[in-house]
Image 1 (cartoon, rainbow, N blue to C red):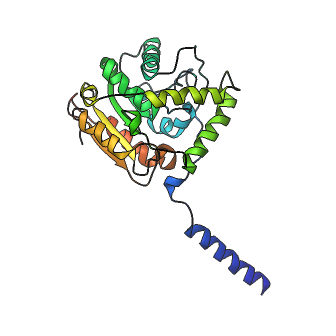
Image 2 (image 1 turned 60 degrees about the horizontal axis):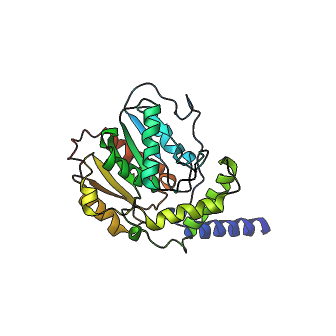
Image 3 (image 1 turned 90 degrees about the vertical axis):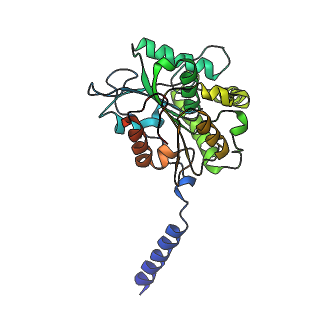
Length: 279
């Protein structure tokens, strides 16, 4: 009888836990691991398909794209990089800025002898992708911009977000393991925060200059990006698509990688003309 009662109690406990499990957008799944690269900076490829460059978000590193690399590498040449001062990358004393980081990306493409690539960007990576699409459109075949903002006013207050605070703490531990300056995370965050507070500052006319096929994408529970700013960008980039992914947040690619990957692959398969990216 004791074991039967204990078993029943366990069943009740499991049921209660399941009933009160946090929804997907309130979870921060583990950072994935990148597959072994064929060359430094390159994921294994079969030599076919257009190049796809994955640009991570602020404070992060290339490992966050582990699920996406595995999904894309069968059909594309997949390139992952780490922004200056992030992950394993070093930096000089120039202040952080999206124009500067966009020039780093163009420099990498030059080094790899890649004339043009599709860009999939998350958060700061999406902003960098938009910057490149404005200023170096000849280097971008198409742009999947997830969780970008066009102006600091488009960023929500994330101070009370448990998920976002957990991300910042995790990023700090990863910085200690990966960075060539492992003890400088606080100053790194302070300097990145200065950039976030002042950049970008794009107007409707700035966005109208983007002519490459673009999808503006976000999660329906994004903690950091205001929906009206997402819609503003999609409305002002000629022919841009607007996609709101359900039941995910700023970390959609971790929370529901299957959904995120399917959307990216669907976008990459499109045959859009430069001003006709589908809604």
